[in-house]
Length: 440
Picture 1 (cartoon, rainbow, N blue to C red):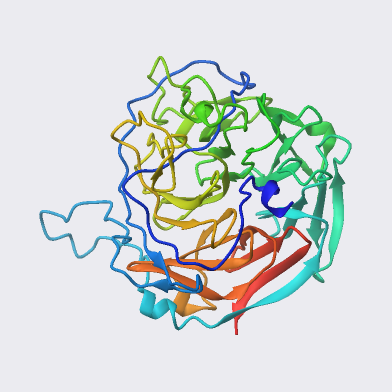
Picture 2: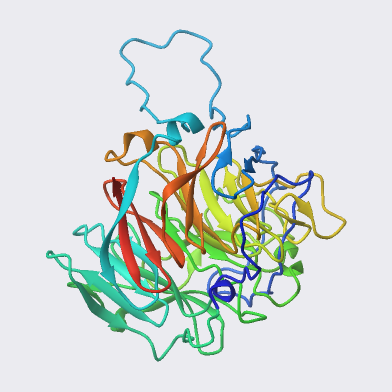
């Protein structure tokens, strides 16, 4: 049942995992219905994002071999042709991806904060810094000043329940820069809805609810569900392939499935606008909401504010899980599902500009990818700059400049990471635990 939640069912084990041959597989996509908002299409041809090589797990499936791999973040600007003025403001210091040798020194633990019913997503309200957690069955908890969770909203009568173990229900929560709460959920017809509500004190006010996006789903899984905002107020929405076409919908330019969407919610009512710098705003064929595409089930993604890179975990089909990265400026790229699963060919006919994953692991090691965050906190200096992610089975890894290292923590039923306002990382378990990652 754990595996079906993220649609990554397969036997787990501890045999070795090696990066596959050149190629990548994509998963089944579902054709979304027209969303609330503009129906115009546009865009430029997909640009090929930088490809990052993968690495190898050891024979026990416990740690990663520090094979040289081109996982460093490429520079975003060329070196200046002239010496900059001494009066110019200094560039911000960005922690680079650390080496595996440094990651091997990371000594961390988990500190349990609460136990809730199927917590799947978390967000901090910028108005007061308080933590809100969304549960799959429709409940939203707010943590008070004493750290105690209180239910502030319940939409259980509107969402698909967890009863069958599938990846449906209340899946995502975020706050916009102007303070509205945004929720992503599947309704009683199994279709995806993104709505927003104004806050009334500590709780969302249902009288102010606006529909933002609606996508008709062709199946009952592969729904993605993560919603996040950038500093400009653009909303990013993770859409899986919907599980209704064996992955083909992820490559259908007319559908909003198997993609990360980028829209700008209207400030005065329902719907959204298309940001003018979206990659397909001038393309008559591809939906202009698409930011990047070619995913099976992007389960949790984040944008690193320091670099602008987007990282995500894409849940595999039958054999391979993967982590993908869109470097800043790489919008419009195709990440390959349904042609590739991880680095392994799933179907023939893929175009030449498919972007390979940063890393992959087989179903002998895990069953479902869980995307995380680049660590920018201060409590764990040896982890700074590393991308931290995991698997539903509970294993947690970190991406370094020369490989991927297993971290010394584990959380059974891991389904979500969170990043608090100080840059420290949190995790939630499908079975209820909410924890902080802390120095050991």
